[in-house]
Length: 283
Image (tube, rainbow, N blue to C red; front, side, top):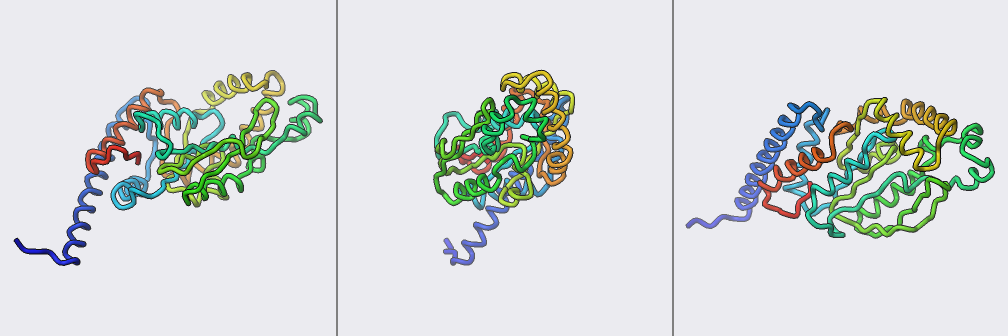
């Protein structure tokens, strides 16, 4: 039997890696093609570069940290996508597999402004907005995401949507293989350059409106105050959020069921695991 030299071994490994990547690419394309035939497909648009990036990470960088950013309008279904994706990826929760960073936790404290105004209606009449990028501490969120990617622990803030109080350094978040960043402004120009994959959740306006008012009531906003804020939500989404759909790697349908999200994510996982044989692989 002929012994291979170091260069020949490297070339052989490279060929094997390229073959595995090609198989993953084909498997993922088949899952996407199947999804497109559904009445409510999950994936509305996908860039070929996204598929290649997933395959490359799975084969060549499988031990690296992966930052997945999921954006969309308020009440579009971002949190549902995150929860069901995590549920599909894990049979049991382990701390070193994934960490979720929510943009909502990084709202700046507005409890003083609310107290001074007396109620939400008067607060909104003063011109205050919860729905512009300035209402969220994007600089702190970016700092925390970078630390997590570097393998460092962070303590994220915790925001109270009823009192508008932000409690600093409250929730321990540990570094993980997969970091999921979810929220209105995770694809904002201040922060999107550190993402590995950018996802936008698209949902029709009328569905967003129904979901938003139901959630607003649970947070103590009803009547005129709720109507005033939703008007602001719609205006700021037009200016700041909807344009980020154009730079997303993947556009997701916010109308799909939770069960279908979980089932399709499982198919994506199997499309990769069947090639890599890595049973702990997420993406």
